[in-house]
Image (cartoon, rainbow, N blue to C red; front, side):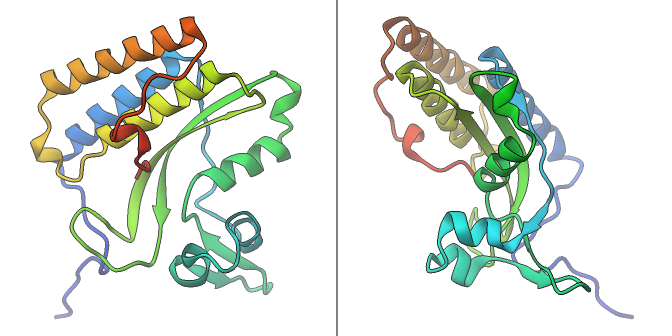
Length: 199
């Protein structure tokens, strides 16, 4: 009998772990909604040129890490390696800037990168992201910095280590930082979590 296993660099999220993911995703959505960000969902794959044009053809992501294939019509498609380019594409294609002066968007999306699997990093992973388009207001930068930092905090590599009361306290502390920054119209002081990518 053939042995069926998950492909290298992927993993199953089993029923006992799923509630932890649901909790963290719900908290991220709650934080985004609090600051007026709307959820956007883009296709799992896009035309390859979207990523080569936005990320640069010589970057490691484009040259080594993308899952790219051709359709029967010989069009090159790529599984989404990150969320920013598809979100900007959707913003432009759907003319979202015409309805609101500032488009505030967030996503929780599956992303795919062909890289060497290691602890806490997979070839298929979840990316939490925020995009605020149409303003140079430093208060908006403060919101984005905090929410990006929150996303990094939320997606700890070992979900079994999450201490919910401590997580809630950290979330409230960060929310207070953003409220003060918005009032003063300047970004809060950066922290280690603020500078990390959201994956």
